[in-house]
Image (cartoon, rainbow, N blue to C red):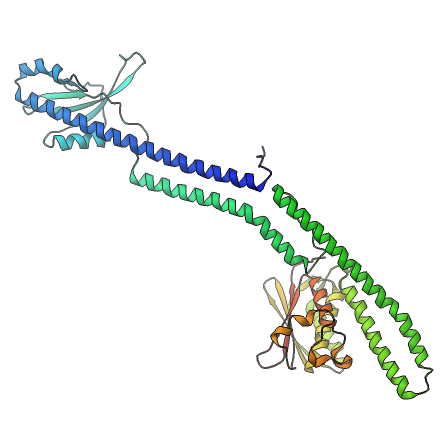
Length: 445
């Protein structure tokens, strides 16, 4: 049977708080009652021990015939005295330490034993009584029937039991507090994680709307916001792709018309501008495609992919070397990953001339390092270079700096693999682009 939790977070926290308060009060009450009963019983035994001591002092001074006359009168208050030994059916009770200790302090020179005896003369059925057996100064037996029942079968309240109860209470309250804090903060943690992830992948699965009403309401609002962001990004991507695609037709016409220009110098400048426009359009289309997650993931060999990229780079006359071995396949989008790594290699060659590519597996992740031997980047620019159309001061020229979309495209494509890229300066000069990829089939597609 499933427990019906309250719907609101407030009512759940109040319920946990009430359970905790009930446990505290219940444990405190049990400890208080146990300690009070022990104190009352000890006080009663001290009084009984005083009465027995007074009766023994009187009986010690009387002769045996006189004792028979006075024994009934001496025990009329709270005790019943008898000059006979305890009944045969009485059972010894060695564990009644409180009574034995009280009598031992009152009568230190007497041998004392405590027995329990049951009889059925009570109207409500059998009743158990305590019997104290001792001897007078001349060795005559004396039994004392007490008006208190034998000790309860439960364990007495001792300091060890009190300490154990307090420890258990602290542990229980701590557990309830942890549950309450967890109940209140876990939805916030999930919401914060989703907010961080939405910037990298607007197509991530929607948040679960189950749970307390406040959490469900926040999750539904977040899902609506994510849907609007996804629609906005999709619309922006479609507009960019459409504009980039449509610009190719007038650029082609302008290129044909430029061939009709007789002035060779002017025709060359026009062709150069058209080439720059064509590169910008091509990069715009690539950027739009980098936001598209339509390519299905496949399992590829990273080592073979890096070796192929190194050979292609050397065929173009670039100084690129590949070192290291992943030794494991990776589930990814092959075309997207190849384009991302090629953009990083091309960027390293452009600014550092010589590029070294290394790969290393660490746990369930692959780290691909692409190092150039250029001037590096200031710390404040290592994040900004991933922004669309951002170019550093050293790359304002179209011939050297490109369009400012290469690193942006690379990062978008890597995010689609469940990976990321970070930049850092090498200790002996140059810039290192570290690409992290999951080994397992983890995709945010």
